[in-house]
Image 1 (cartoon, rainbow, N blue to C red):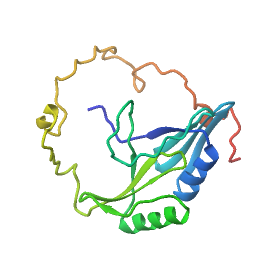
Image 2 (image 1 turned 135 degrees about the vertical axis):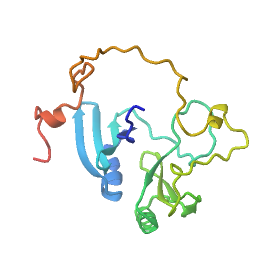
Image 3 (image 1 turned 30 degrees about the vertical axis):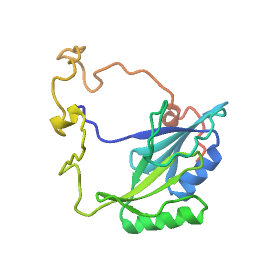
Length: 203
């Protein structure tokens, strides 16, 4: 529809980038591939896989969140429950569980959910994280399944996007718009990572 390819990055917040780096890079093995910083502000990129990142803002006034069990119902303002990362197989999942435990982080037993097996933990900022190994031969994208005693009405329309629900945007470009940049683009923060205007700490 729009050429969506996946999640480029998840952006979270910390007031302690040091412990965040130690956890995400040194314990979980995600490379620290980008960093921006100025007084009162940092933005660091940790690589999950090519072109997929977890990023952290460091703001000195941020407070760690209280730990909440993954998926436990909550009340009040909330936009996030937990983030789940895929691992290659059960061997990797069990090895990761042992590493988290040895490092002194609480980590759950391995849970079999049918479509995946998972472990649950928290990063130093209290962010709830899950690691999952897919069950062999199970792919909800291939065989979607809805098991809900009171499904949302829209869910009953099936897994495919439904056309005509939203108004179509008004075209702003004519057929002669010059490729490959069909809309106006403005410079944003992060250009210094690639244009050499600031010192690269790896060099």
